[in-house]
Length: 497
Ligand code: GLU
Image (tube, rainbow, N blue to C red):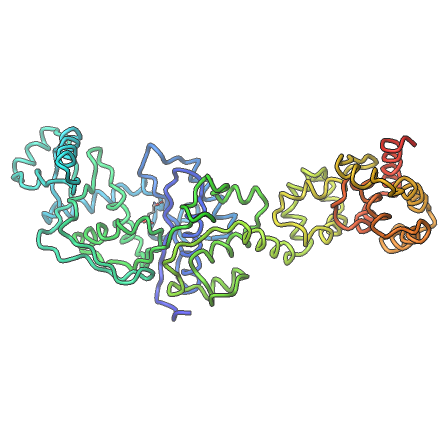
């Protein structure tokens, strides 16, 4: 663990152009954990300056996903804070002020080149076999008085940064990538403010990170190439440059960049599949970071104590769904019955329960938990695994199980079922797992059959298939009359009784 740093302020800055993706969630977790580990502040900022792709609905989806993950922000939308507002479209005056400062210091210039002119320059550069190395600085040499006259005449223009001619290489020490150096002479005179007055991404981010007193910028390495550009803007504005930490890419199991092809990619999708927030936070925290190179179960409190930038690797991280399943299974086993019933409610309802029933007899549902606690990777497996508990007197027989178990040549399944029915219907036997199971077990001797040939037919007749959770632990949770009725139905449907 690194020594706590003074006044750490980090931010997660999603653009609300879609749902919260796994990569974004990992970035959020790393920022959050870093803030917590250092007694700092975790700030949420909505980067909605792209009006064509940003929506309020997406903002709400992202906020909901962050809340579901349990990543509480200290400043940001809904909670406010001393450096707000926390939405870029509400901060336009701050970008305008920064532009005025740069204008007054002669560090920017208006550019009147039209899109057509720029496209033509690009095409010409490319047709000569070369590549376009950026804006050719045509407007940089326009006399300021002349430029002002054109602006006053209403000519459309953008504002570009005047990258210093003699600038040395742009260098910084990335907390993950180490020392980085970018030649300054290939830096474009980048646009800071568009012709409609809106700031570009690089300009807005530098203004915001400065005004929000951000000390560490922890973000995806897809922004690595933006960093030298942003440093030039910091320098022009005379602002201190924060520490950068760029996080490696997340790859699918096939080594390709994680995308829709790999399946679910948004936090919501994993939530809807019954991944627990604790498991997802633990899993995503380990994409690129490790506690000690081997520990895999890292609860939130440990993460919030131990997270450090020096244990982030620059190696690409691989998203392994199987590991996520394993980890989720672990958290399901560790969560205990009451929390499970609450988390599992939507899927229990899908299985056949009702919200009223869950509220009315939580203890019964708590007894369901041990039946499946060790058998669930994701909560959305609940309907398939537990629907039989909610069928009442009817059973939905699985064809394959009927064939393999009940109709198995020489199995005597019909005789076993008739005898088991008599035991199960016998009111003198206590309705509890052990006495029922022990009594039914005597049929092994009666029929000279291995236990499997006694229990499997009952399992199919009561639970519908041959792979259900433990049989008599399930049966004791049902009504005697219902279980008897299911065996009767099976005897009738399969054996014509
Ligand atoms: N809004 C940017 C994005 O969603 C993040 C910018 C940053 O972290 O600097 O990719």
